[in-house]
Image 1 (cartoon, rainbow, N blue to C red):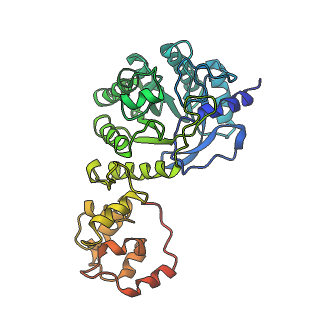
Image 2: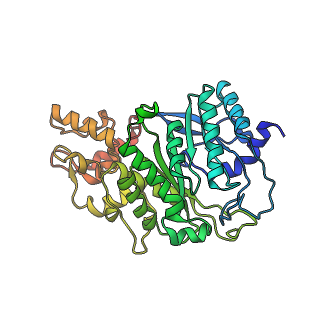
Image 3: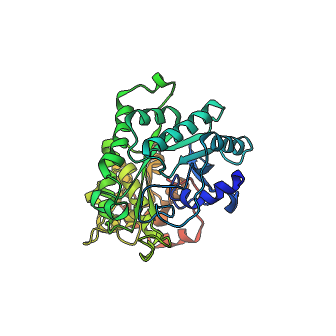
Length: 386
């Protein structure tokens, strides 16, 4: 079996690991290779999602390569996978790689093979983006070695707590196998100088949840997310909408609506970048997010009757207004330092989405005029996302 065919056969399992929100699209490599766009250093670049093996000793209820499932298994040796990645990288097909694996021969041995692959890549001139997965139950020294080679390190927590994890992965231990390696990595980032390992900076830390298969509420997921952001300094949390796989215990479970994952991403950014707390999110009585953008839902509850004065509101309050993010807030703050804003056309000139924010703001003490609908007929300036 040639290398490309092997990578293609591993694609369904590789697709379980995220390195981009679901708004991303496949790379033009098409179905032959599991290559997707991911944001690296402010740019979107093609990333190969590669597994060492689809053989696995664990029986995760949602996984296409769970133990006991009748499916063909394929495996790379570390040197073989490193050569394949280097060939694709040098040929310009990819700019980075996510290295993961099924667990074969134990977690520690599997982690050693992943580390060997990473070491070979770096030693043979691969200077692209490297995202390295930590296997459940990886040892502390292995975590340190992973951080020596990788630009990003991750452990899939899969569920927001032990009781939910038991429904998804009955042979995994939430704290001892999954959360503890993340805690070790976070401690290393806080207490050690990366230059001692020849690094300018430590790799970022991320995790991933499976959404919709364990009976978890949005509030359960985002409460755990907020804790990870605050206590471990994670840079991203990914939300993977559950999809049933034939011949697995969850084959009859309905697929999760991808819109739920999108709302969780929107709420994640409110927690990470916009100063929201979990309790401030617009929960339903059942602990779920509403079906609309959670920032808009919050604004409807709090700003519709008490609009924000754009000339005087502090940055923290400006960030609560739909249509205003960190970059747009900075633009607005700079403009009002130079002159008082009095006309809605000034906001349009600044690249603010006037029709979107108008229901929630005042400008120079005035609500938007009825004629503001005319603005909607004009295309607003295209600016980078805020």
